[in-house]
Amino acid sequence: MIFLLCVVVFALVAGYAAGGRLRNFERLRLRAWWLAPLGLILQVQVPAVWHPSTTLSVALLILSYGLLLVFAALNLRLAGFVPMFIGLALNLTVVSANHGMPVTRRALEASGQGSFLSELVHGKGAKHHLAGPDAVLLPLADVIPIPPPIAQVVSAGDLMVYGGVVWLVAATMRGRPQLWKPRRRKEQPQGRDREAIGVAGESDAPSVSIIGDYAEGPYGPVILLELASVDAVRWLHGAFLDMAKGSGPLALSSQPGVAFRRLGELELRLGQAESTKHLHRSNTGTRTHFVWSCSGPEWERHALFLEPFLEGGMGHQYLTDGAVDDAILEVSHGESHFSP
Image 1 (cartoon, one colour):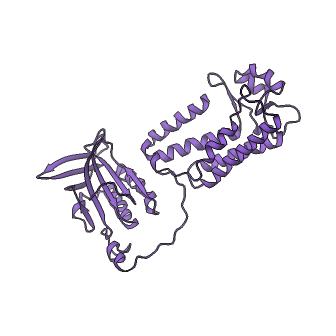
Image 2: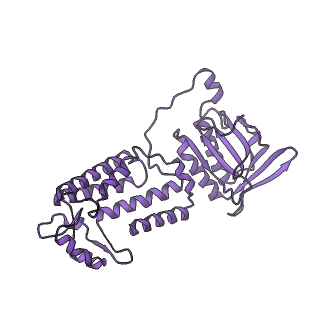
Image 3: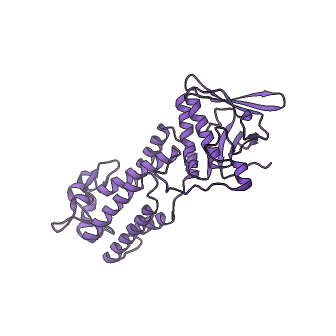
């Protein structure tokens, strides 16, 4: 358990170091997520509370790995699930071949768990047993000791699973949990829809609508850019990349297809260097005016945050820090948060 907590903490630190944010977990979509807790529950066997036979214990362990493998297979498009799937498959193979997970005496002693030797020798382990001369696939069993204070023995499969967890957490915090997406047939809009949203490539301007809205939320001022279609996402993505190349400044309210409701102006600028504060507020008359200034690498990073929307993904993404900036800036695709 201590090792698992260390892995989670390391994953969070890696995610923050890569410029990620915890709030991006709101957009993580796991298929058949309930298989994961169900599979983990089946692995929790406490002899002091329940005394199943060895055969039943191993059967439950194999069943748990089966459920976890199905869960991993359904989510292979997400970062980290490929090594998780391989690690789980390795553990399942070892457990099935040895009627439980073998643990070597050397690994137990090196990890500071020599006191458990007597339990394993007398067959009191719920899932593990002391490796004997008849053990097969022993290099893939629990033979890797982690000394105190963690005091745990793990397998090669465990390390692959933990590595996948770190990858998933860090990628999700960066807003890019998906490794690949299936190709989708692009449908051409017809009739009024064609006139309203346009067709990509016909114009450099956002022929689709981008609606800018503003409100005072419970955590302070909020700016929302509602992107009505993938074409709108593609245009804003390109605008961010143009800003990174030195284009601008760009006043969004003056762009074709962009309409602001309670927001006066949002002006994009290229900053000279990275700074803590990026979004500045300056009131002009009765309308609220904001200047969003970022360095080239920061504009490229914002463009990356929009990429999940380019394939039609729905949700929202926060691009500024409400604790530092004069407002929280949220980009939304397929969602509507403010009333007209």
